[in-house]
Length: 129
Image (cartoon, rainbow, N blue to C red; front, side, top):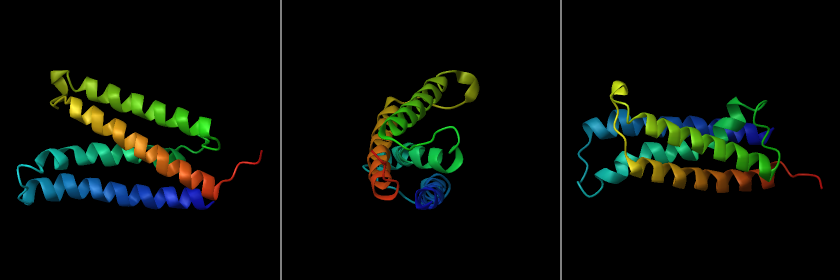
């Protein structure tokens, strides 16, 4: 199944990009103050973009992703979990910071991921009508 292989490749590359931003770029590379917000939001954007690809690769039995409806449900559920996770950061025990821009970048990331995955679904997994 080429869609699953593509999903695996996208997930690996995306995860490496997130790790590079979090553990190499942010701590060791000087970032112009005008670009700091973009670098700060990049992991949320990339991680949310990866939601349909991760669902296809890891949770294929739960999220079948055979139709447009399946993709819509999967992306909506993933976005809901991301938003809940962001609001849980309001609880001081976790030691993380809440930011509305993280939610906005997550919505944008899921939207772009949905569009890209939908094109791949049409190309590699045509649905018999």
